[in-house]
Length: 333
Image 1 (cartoon, rainbow, N blue to C red):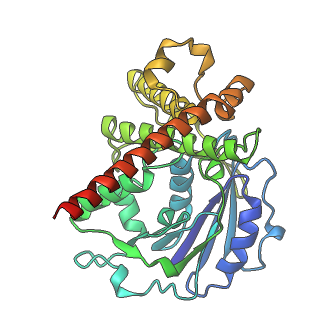
Image 2 (cartoon, helix red, strand yellow):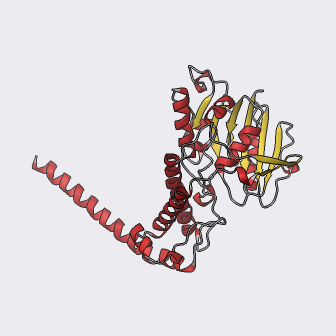
Image 3 (tube, rainbow, N blue to C red):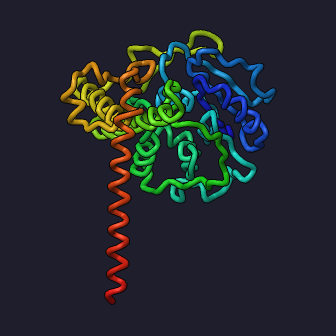
């Protein structure tokens, strides 16, 4: 059955209400499956365009965003033979042609193309449903932001023996937004600068941990994925016993990597210092996000900025000395 557009949304209503009408105006799909991943305020069908191709499902009971489990659920529920994964902040432009033969893997004859370009375009994906099943979808032990697409791409490359195709930049449009939203973090208090730093730190922490979990616990079609129980019409909930978990030793290492990376990047404090200082000063991530307290904000506004100024000054002096050395070398010739 044709092409399914697949979108999962958690507390991103304002983005979805912009992107959904644009997807509805696109003529190349037979279904737009939208999954509400436990948004605080449930999505309502009447809020969305009056497009009969839209199908709205909701997963209850999820306390945090989990891209890999969310999209695995959605990709399984989609009915199309070819699937276009679009985040809530993205939509296809008029130039997007899913029938373009350059999107097919030559030997397999199946669509497999990853997004390219800035502002979240890399997170979009056009793929045959058969390929999703062959590799087991996204890696469900990964959490947060980052490396999920690279891991999926690597497994597709190994499975097919071919290089996935690329979606041209001009084929996708996205809504620009901050890194704290992209990383699934609440907006931090203390000013826009801190919110940006917090989002970047959260992204780095999850990216580093996801690289580690991919090495420790490779994913594939034989790995049991999460199961969801139907609670009613269009309503589903996770079977908690089915959720994949890393081995305890790996889970502890991942938590420590996230903690050291987040606080080290946010506060510009060496990881060795974080390990030596009291654990309570730099606590681990919690379901609601990273607990940034007043003393973290104080250091971010004072000590971190001083360190950053020192580093930038040293870099500027180094660049000046290098340019002077290059200039004197040219003159000596």
